[in-house]
Image 1: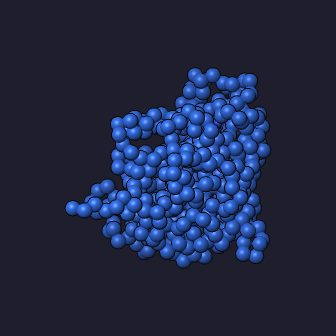
Image 2: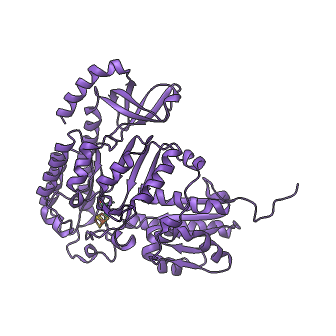
Amino acid sequence: MTQAPTELRPKKLFIKTYGCQMNVYDSDRMADALAPHGYEPTQTMDDADLVVLNTCHIREKASEKVFSELGRLAELRKEGRNFMVGVAGCVAQAEGEEIARRAKGRVDMVFGPQSYHRLPELIARVAAGEMVLETEFPTEDKFEHLPAASKLVTRTRGLTAFLTVQEGCDKFCSFCVVPYTRGAETSRPVEQVLVEARNLVDAGVRELTLLGQNVNAYHGLDARGRSVGLGELCARLAEIKGLARIRYTTSHPSDMSDELIEAHRDNDKLMPYLHLPVQSGSDQILKAMNRRHTRADYFALIERIKRARPDMALSGDFIVGFPGETDADFAQTLSIVREVGYASAYTFKYSIRPGTPGATMTDQVDEAKKTERLATLNELITTQMRDFGKSVVGRTLDVLIEKPGRMPGQIGGRSPYLQAVYMAGPERLIGTVQPVLIVAAGNNSIEGKIVTHEERRPASVVESQAIAAF
Ligand code: 5AD
Ligand code: SF4
């Protein structure tokens, strides 16, 4: 048997993604950038020609994982495996030089999120013997240069897709590295977003989640050079036939403009589920965190949002043990959670990030206290999540059917509130939105029954009652 020349042999790419949804999106775009150069994705490191670690810098633990993974990769190389190693993402951006120094000989290229469109060129430089370090913020727009995925590839990624519309952050919360790792806030132009969205929908995507570290600060330019907010961007996206749902994440309370709130009232495709982190319920801590709003502002905002969209469900992020947080401050966080009632929430122990103002604050909270507070908060949030699941029992919800279920004859999808829903039904419904009567709620998913349009009428009475009770 004759062997194909090495240049023609498809090369295998393994990307390990850490952290947030934007990294998931970025990993796909890196794969798209390399596809025309013969790289095919592989699900295992074992047969990879190129391993990329797409890293997260948000908390210390996330950062540390990079070095332990690099150690493992070095072992594989010692055993004779031959592959290239790249470190991408926020750790690369923030600690590029440190990685290049500490992991000399174990890493071939270190590159930040603004260089992904140049990946083929970086690989060529490595092949020519260079150790590549690329952590500048180039002036060119990477999105102009990143190729779109083929329809076939998009299909394999499923019916829901992420789409980055905004990157970076100008808020400088005192705990957060994002303004340093992802740089100043920038928004993609409207037309660029629309083109990408249309391509995704053409390939079968039914739900888009618009991404940005501070997504509701979006202010992209339209074709006439006018600055457009996120509400208007969603209106333009909603015009795309075949697109059923739009979501966005993550939002800062100070950037919830009237225009965006009204979009939740007027745009049927915008889902009634909002990730709106508050981080703490104590005004003193909010101030120390440089969050730029008070507890009362947050309540007033939620009231405005619920007036526009009474069935809006909320999710949040919370940090416990920020420097100076007393028991009384923490009690305020518990009380804000009780008062708002979250459908879901992410909770974190404060983690010192070098270079941020929080790192040099003198009144750090000890680890045991953080652990104790986290457990208390988690208990409350878990109860709320369970209660939220139960609150939709008896309602008829639109479910985007996404995949076959685990049992034969079963299909699965997501409610408007991002709940996983399972029901009996034929696979031909995958890709459609169906009215589903919710009959039971478990810990991680809910169970429903597809209703016919006739059955739906009386069910919607139940629905409006349930909304009123929210
Ligand atoms: N320590 C703990 N949690 C953090 N987050 C951001 N920075 C830190 C930190 N230094 C959390 C915030 C943010 C989420 C993405 O991560 O809650 O909203
Ligand atoms: Fe970090 Fe979000 Fe604050 Fe920006 S708004 S600094 S991304 S926590």
